[in-house]
Image (cartoon, rainbow, N blue to C red; front, side, top):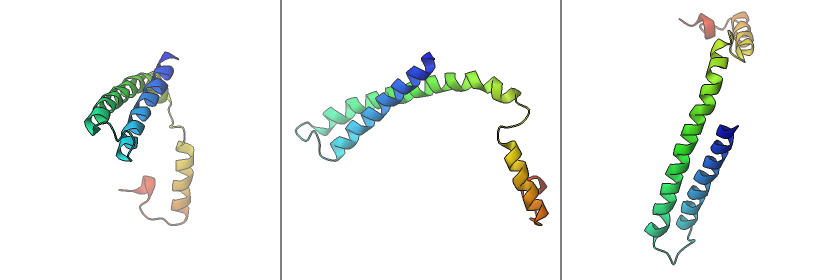
Length: 99
């Protein structure tokens, strides 16, 4: 649960910093030198991105064993049906038949 909250907070930090930089490019904060706005916002954006990477890796690692232990990918049945349809239609080297 903590990783989820951290991930959302890091996302909000990242998006907010990017929006501040975009606003400066569009003319907001015109009285302030560009470096005075963009440099701190870039640091906050980098911090948000690092936070998302850290919490995202925690979220992924928690699910990795579950996904790896699944003998069949979640949508593998749909993929198999498409390949079967391609073979039935004479689809040459598609999917499992690809060499």
